[in-house]
Length: 438
Length: 144
Image (cartoon, rainbow over all chains, first blue to last red; front, side, top):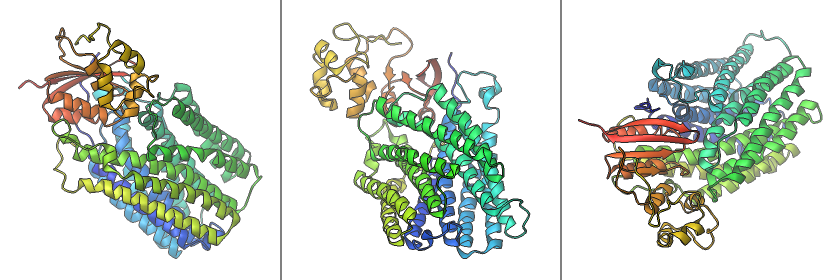
């Protein structure tokens, strides 16, 4: 049975590209800060400069990159346009300004300014969630309210994304409460477990479902491998849906749940890792470009992350150094390397689509690889992967000199990555005005 | 739909090995050389794998190996772009549309980014999913 596809209008590629550009700027700033604040990183993580660095990476880099990826991927996954392009544009400005304000106030240690910036960020995230909630509305009812269900709308990606949006809403409320609590103490319980719960809600409730969901959709496409099987996706969805609330509640005051929740999340990570390994083996694309090497290396960071996470939850390892090393393996190894790899695949496509899509078939157009620089991508791969491994070890040892060396490696790698993006984005200069929603 | 037919009567399939194709279709060797497909080292690979390895468009190779017979159905050309990574499917379709008024395209997934491009070029499209992993899009020039 054939249907007229409801896809005559797609989001401008400039929207996700705007988010990616801001995210990359935050990434460069964050890793430069790692080298600059090396002595501070040998101490406790609840330190103004360390908190500023953490939020530069988690909000500026990771969250903005995921937001950009969402705006690019949701129309593809749901086969419907984003509800409001204008909201996506305003949200970008609000979130960028708010994150800058938060990082600055963390750095200065001024709580009223931090609370105001957090409120602004919450407004930006609220717009994001509103935009996506309206886009998702009525998803199971088919196209145009016709009740026609020719395609499966609630795919694993759509389910995991919906879980991620819920996690983001809860993380935002939690973070806003923490910021307000610095002005007027009202949160019950001990301080550090509450901070840990906030971090894990963000990491596992927002970032992890989005990472799993996006990879379920794009990895098979990029590797030319079979799509994820139904049980693989179900196991991940269930493990995350059970594990994250259990872990967060455990941290907030039900200790018995912490290890159970951690094991459930670890199971989701193991299933994901096994799926990636199987897909790499079964792929029909024999050569791996640097973007794919980044994502596969990122997946290789999951086993050490799982070991560290379970050991911390079980009480076998403890202390701020272990916590910082764990954060680097997860935030830097798994998440950041995945995002870098995906950006090296997605950004050239979006630029190609905007600039050369209208000319394709009418005149010769360059390939995606022709927009980028494999040499710079390779340099970025060596420096970033090596730098993250070295940083984790240096943090564990608490050695400021080696932290600075690792931070310098990461900075050079991030600059090489930024140079690749700039080279690709330069193709937009002088591009013809868009037509047909391009 | 156009009936595919080869020089020797048996159509080439994407899962046939390169070696098998060359043995049954001598003209294929020259085509593979031009497409950068290594017949010596890649003989054991399927056409789909060899095309992916060489970055050659599978659909175009199949069209060249299976020259279309005179149309017997409503669609002049069938283009199989399954197994190609973005943006190759879009590129192949837009190149084919430059010389055709009607086109049937086989893809791995719904081409959400392609629809605005073909609409802007004055074509309309209908999409169906007859089997898991096969999306079929009929494209025809919009009547004035």
